[in-house]
Length: 401
Ligand SMILES: *Cc1c(COP(=O)(O)O)cnc(C)c1O
Image (cartoon, rainbow, N blue to C red):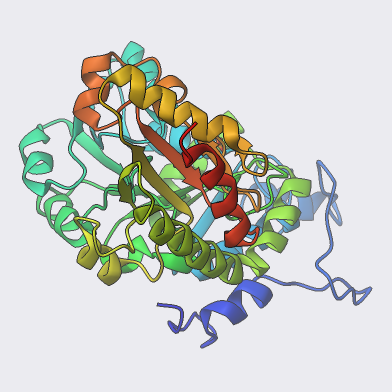
């Protein structure tokens, strides 16, 4: 996937380092950061022309800033999108897309097991009578069946969190195209380094840039990618009038983060595979879920659709009862001295979380069981530490007390 050529004929890794760079007259080598809220005009006539959209140029950083443009241009090149718009966070990217595609009385179809706050966001919009139906990620027939005459958006995340279920993007694209409804893919887990949904026919990609695009846990950010017509006519008014704008400082951090995206994602994927393979051999571990493992039920689909497995894996501890499974899982968490106990991911630092008592703690036990999130399940987002140290950290809690 990484050998696809961008608009200038350059390959992925070259675009990650070079795309979007514009030099000022000072000749700086590293991209400049433009910390300014507004921009001045040459004359009254020039101001009038810019405001009328007849002359090029920046006016106000809520809807245009050169450093934000750098990040947008670079990410668009990597996703193979006509255009990108940056936002202040992943949630503001998803909110802006939702607001741009729907109005009161409309309907959304979304995959089960998306990021928890995304479900909260869609619930919030039910107050404007925008309703959401949830369907199994890997069942295209269920997507088809959930579509209503007022459905205006299909939304999914692949691989899913925490069980790494994979969507057959081509099959769901077929459903979307047949009904003329835009398919929106949250590409946070894979990033364009491992998966490019637009090339498979998706209409819009959203990102929490907070995660792997930055990759070092420093700043929040988000992005929306798609064709120029959608961006300019449908999304741009929402962004300009609601103002979920990315700061120039964060845009600079994120643009620099993209320069190392490919090597980071490759390394995350290799280390996660090492840790997942090791976990599969440990007594007391009932099963491991990681898309690159041959034991993953959608292993072949994942290999065809992604160029790496990504950083996130899940594994389940054995135990006779729920209480015993929880105790075994918590012992692994509490045995960690290296892995950070946090639900966050997308960092160079490995993290571990017990979904049933944290991210998915508010679900009813029945809903959790249906989603496959048992008391014995742990999720690890594998960082860039030495994988042998990560395994040794997990081993401590796996040993019998
Ligand atoms: C974190 C996350 C989001 C939300 O992003 P923020 O930058 O925290 O607002 C959305 N989708 C996924 C898959 C995420 O992991």
